[in-house]
Amino acid sequence: MGRLEGKRALVTGGTRGIGRAIVDAFAGSGARVAATGRGESGGNPSETVQYIRADNADSGQVKNAVAQAANALGGLDLLVNNAGVELEKPLEATTESEWDWVMTVNLKAVYLYSQAAIPHLRAAGGGAIINLGSISASVADPGLAAYNASKAAVLGLTRSIAVEHGRDRIRCNAICPGWIDTDMLAQTFSQAGDADAARAAIARMHPAGRLGAPADIAAMALWLASDESAFASGQAFTIDGGLTAGSLADPNRY
Image (cartoon, rainbow, N blue to C red; front, side, top):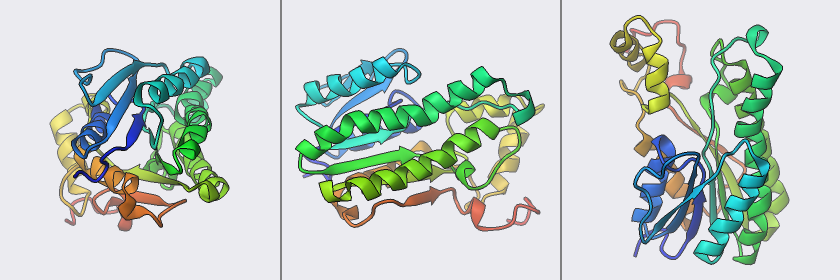
């Protein structure tokens, strides 16, 4: 029997990158999963995984996605708020509309999905909400002001959900990934003069000696979704290969 046998999960942004890895891990552990995305399903639909098209910048679509998932799965036990966007602009150059876009997708959608899902989790006798934060919630890279602020706010919301709904047997935790090898990160490297050199330099900054993989984050999500983490709530778990544990002054020291 899988660790999530019989569980019903909704994973936002579940068609690629970290989200797709979480969907695959949950389904492989016995859960039935609904995955949201803005575009094509990426081959996700199956007997255990269903796809729901939803734009996280649209509050109506967010609420409808939760209703569709609960209806298709017969309820909800787990919610993973994974979908997010990144804006690489310094604060001074960030327009108000760009700021609002990042906050809507990265923060407001987490509030809306959680608010809509909590009654279903309560009806199921409890469950777990997992929010994707970032190391950028606590350490700031330049040129990411809106992103940094949105992820810091996600951690505050995570704690609030945990405190308010612990009596409902609903746990809420956040995962804070570091540099994870996804399409989004590849786009960042592509903007460098030498993408391969940039990738190698960032990898050297990690005590683990490598970039993270989506599977590294999925493994933590699987634990947080399982009964093995029954007493963990209101916490932020950093998964970054040791990057933020030390000084970044000398990236060649490892």
